[in-house]
Length: 294
Image (tube, rainbow, N blue to C red; front, side, top):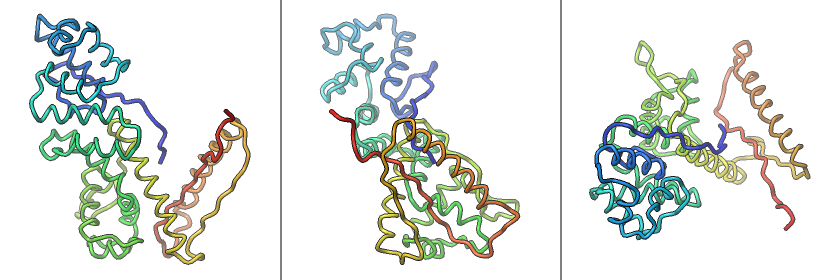
């Protein structure tokens, strides 16, 4: 599961009045609003917007929509007034802007949660996005997806809670089961039995990258806890510290990627079914511990 950053490629609506909750990029939202206002208000222009919002620059809206200017808390409120947003949209717009300007994942998670806190009342596509974000942000949801495929799996939250390490609450197990079904990562067969699904996360790239980073961070914390919580014969945690050129780094990353595929083929080879299995998290980390001179 890669956490490689990706550009947000939200489709800018060409019909209807855009709402902040339909976006994860405030610049994309503003571009959609500009297009909508140009269609529905003959007097609308960048100069007109600046006048009613109280800006001296006639192109400030254009610069913000193109990502060339940031919005201060005061400007967020000015924009909300000039765009005619209602109270709910104001809160969503502020969260959307703060999400785009956040510098840490802790901030991004907080403002994304605020943006989607009314997800239950949102359109189905947004509820699916929220479920996809949440399922990858829970460390135990993806391991549970693999546990579902095991012959001894019991669809019982208390059984699942005891089976996972470290243990979770039955309520957390039930939530994970619900999310797996909502996202298609688990489904029902003809007999109604829960089986592992094949769906992949397909939400906005910005949200996907954040959710995957949440997952990796949780798995790294899990590995750290295993140093004290598991006997040495039940875990294997090693590391190398080496000096590499940029070319060697890229070559090593490529080899690790190829090795991951080789491991999956080996583990999932139907010709060698194991008698008894447990679910493992297998991680590879290649991170710098020095920085360039100067």
